[in-house]
Length: 394
Image 1 (tube, helix red, strand yellow):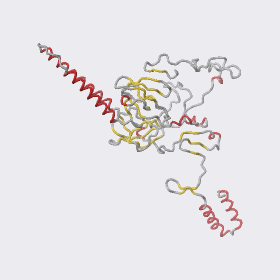
Image 2: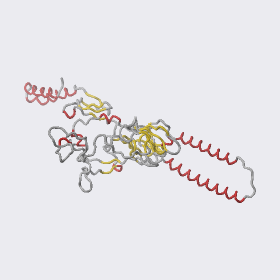
Image 3: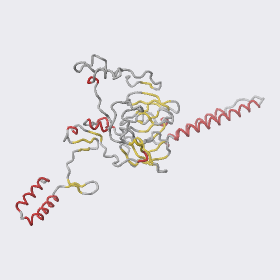
Image 4: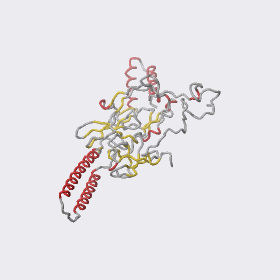
């Protein structure tokens, strides 16, 4: 078997058997011949590389490690082969200043936080108000969220921005936002109301001026019906012009029922707030031209949202994040999490579960360090009127 150890052994044998003046040249020739006979692998860029027995395995879905240490035995993360290997766009990031869980007075208000590697916050566009087609440049890793983000470039203005990357979104694809239609519809409705007000005022003045009564005709009814038909035709043409494709941001009123959506807003012309973590999505159950629509979240909750809210087609990327295993506590420290001490391991004056002999918590109901119920206690005093079906009700 050809290996570095065998090459070194060959050198020592040659030193003993070959005279000194021929030792160097003969040994170098032998080593070069042995290296040339080593099996080589051709990489994607065309250059040959010697075989390297790595400790990682990436099958496109998960990346695992060879268990050469206890911390690597169970370590498993989602594959990142398709992500950008370089740095993010500097202008689309801001510095993240760690506070260690402390407020402006220096007191700890959030426990178990501190340390970790330095990060920069990616400025993700959750509003999607820019009009026009945009090209996906690349998919990037975001340390501040579980989902991946996509860098898009406007095809006319060449402006760059970050959006949440849906599943199966690839570089080179075209995405578009139709949120500008909400503004246009609002202006059109305002204009039609003003025109109707002017017509009604003119008609009332004309009726007051006329003294003789005339028989009613059906001209007004016909004009109203023609206006209604024209409005329906305009809406049908508008719905045909909207592309229901992955990554497109569309007002909910124009999305057909049954579509899988994510990054859903809660207010008219507001930012997306629901279904933004890795692998999450929602299903549109009902929608209309005005009022509210009904969506079903992944938790099972059915709620109402305004029809002019934004929603992006598809589900969020990185669905395998829930199967990841960090492998060791040190990896969690790099993410900014500090150790969590059990209440039963504390003293009596430090925690309600502390003190006593053994591991007993004194037959006390599980509670927080401040005496609040930790398991099963209700935290919602009043349900939102927009919730139709609670997530815990079958």
